[in-house]
Length: 83
Picture 1 (cartoon, rainbow, N blue to C red):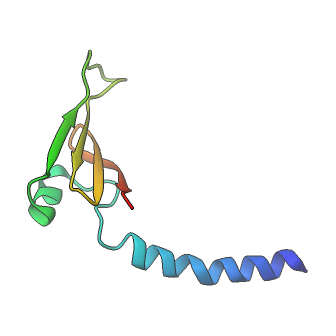
Picture 2: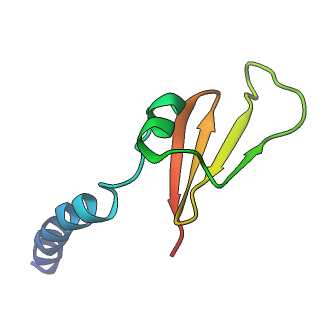
Picture 3: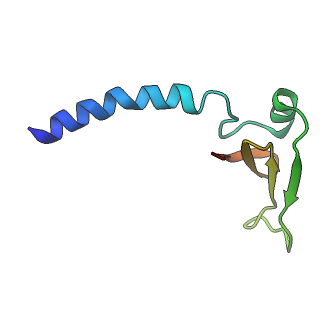
């Protein structure tokens, strides 16, 4: 009985967090050109060093101050919000 009440409460909270917390940030799969068009030039850019192979692609990080966007080649992997 407790599990079902907890599960119902969790279902009510999930849509609130997904719509408010992540609505204004780049999502996984977005291309670099789309991110740059929507958010402008990043404050800083970091590029991974070392050999680039098919198994180990280059990772690029764009820092926008309040959030950072991690790219694999030219596709968004993750967005990290800084609080």
